[in-house]
Amino acid sequence: MARDDERSYLTVLAAMFGVVITLLGLLVAVASSACDFRTERTQCFDIPRPALAALPLLPLATMAYIQITSSLATLRSYYLRGVEREIRSIAGSPIEALPGVLSSSYFDFIQTLVSLRRGRIGIRISGLIVLCSIMVIFGGFTFIVAMKMPLPYRAAMAFVYIPLVLILLKEAMSATIGGRSLFAKVLHRYVADPGERLFTSSPQTTGRGIGSYLVFPRPEDWHKWLFLPCAFGFGLLCSGRLPSNDTLMELMIAILVVEYLVYQGRYQWNDIRGLDEDLVHPESGARKRLPITHDDARGSVGKSTWLIAMRQSLAITAIVWMFYAGHGETGWILTTAMAAVWLTAIGYEALRSRKSTVNLTRMTRGSLCLVVLVGCGYAVRLFVGFGISGISPLEQPIAWTLVAAAWAFGVMFVSITWALEGLAHVNQIDDKYYYATGGSTGQPGLPLLSRKPHLGAMLSFLKIDVHFRGHLTKTEAPLCVNLKPFTESGGSLLAPWNLGLIMSTALGVMFNVGFFQLSWQVGLVVFIAALAATLVVIKMRIGIGYWFIFGGSVLVLGMISLTSGVLCLAFVLMYTLFRSNSYHSLKNPFEEIAKSLRSVRSKLFVLFVGKQTASLVNNCDPMQPPD
Image (tube, rainbow, N blue to C red; front, side, top):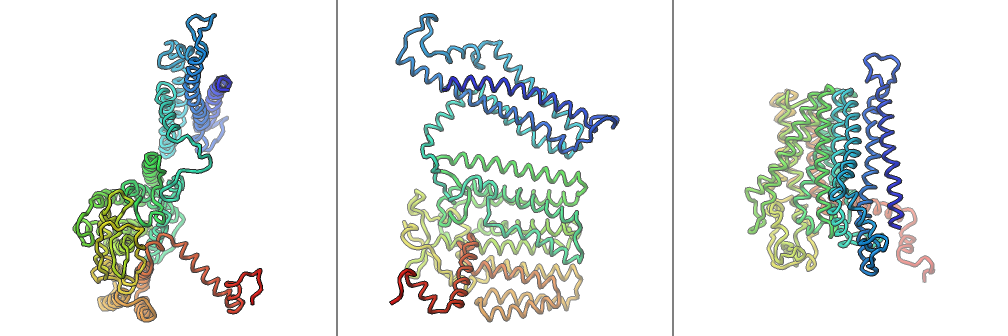
């Protein structure tokens, strides 16, 4: 059967080489008849430029198929040689018509002729001529097409074709000169995992496939995507104008570049560096970080690394296109945003990698610097959204006040999440709180919080006393779900989330006073109303009294300054939402929504059928009549 496959391979290979040569000839004829290739636009075809730029994909796809077939032929050759040697060990008598040649030695015999490592020099040169000729013709055709295209098309073609050709050449080298190494790698992988589980898959660390992760690394952070368009909308509200089609197009490109390309790549880097922490996290299933199988961690990390580079390359390409398409101001905004994201990421990862071994619930200088850095992402998002709306901080210095407000909001947003995540690392036993220590980490007695000291630092601001208890594992006590001390008090007034809320509100008021040039008397009233609403939400229990006082303050604020009321309402509602949830519910928002819908459905059902019938349905077997 293997030799039949070999004969089929030779037939297919000969046919595919003919197809490649024919395709290249036809494509040259088609391209030469296009008007872009003629100095005089007579007797020519007006072929769309995207179609011209995509023409080289046809022979490239055919060459890729040839490469796949060649790789299989290489593996088949080594496999058959192994089978032949096994047969020779059983029937090892020489062939009478071929003295010195043992039985079943065909593949070993022909390798002295066709092998690209030790075969006949003329055959090796002939194979090199075939490969180089196709690549030269393909490369020359692609280069000629690119030279006739405008600069943005050239950049796009270079971005697409150069990596694909390099990958193809690398695989060609692996299947020819490096055939022995290729076979050894495939054999080692097969021995390690022979694939006998059929339809069962290797257990994942997060219950999520690597393909899903690479498409969207952080699905639970979908709410962050709202910040940039909200900043854009707030900028339009401040300027009092409607967006044009070009402005909306710039907004969509900015969201794609900042959120999907730059930030998702930055999150992937964070997941790679924090892989060991995520594996032992109490909420690892809810976090859905980088999934790895227990036998291929290197593969998952490698795929994620390649995709980080691809995402950043696409972001740079989109930014360059913005400059050449006449959107230079937006191009500079996106360039500044991308640089700020990665500079902040480098500082964040350097600080976060420092482990703490003592006093895990104390704010250190490293944790303080981390708190300062985490707010920068939200400042970047507002910088982009506000700038695209027409109020660029690069031109109007007062807008930097609002960028600072977004930074303070980010400090509040992330630090309150860290406090909730810190509680997820805590056990509660007999009304006392203890560090959760990781028996599953292989380091008995090592607190999980020592790997993330900034989470322990957030616990120092909660009005609970957290102790260390050696060798306490997650299975010995339920994780802390009693959030009452936090939801009732909000922690210390000096907690980063409380200070962030106060600072973001104050800076937002300052922006409104300066941007709209309000008098100092009106500005003072606006500031007092905003401060009252902020302090109410921080110090009062979230209930009827809170909503009454807070609603009155925001109403007064909105009547004086609509934009100030909108800002204050947005900041405080986000603070309230996070303070009244657990870390698990934040990471699984749709579970809470489904639970609420089920509760509403049950109440409506009881209301419709009556309490007695509902009790009967819920408590009795419907097939048995009640007593």
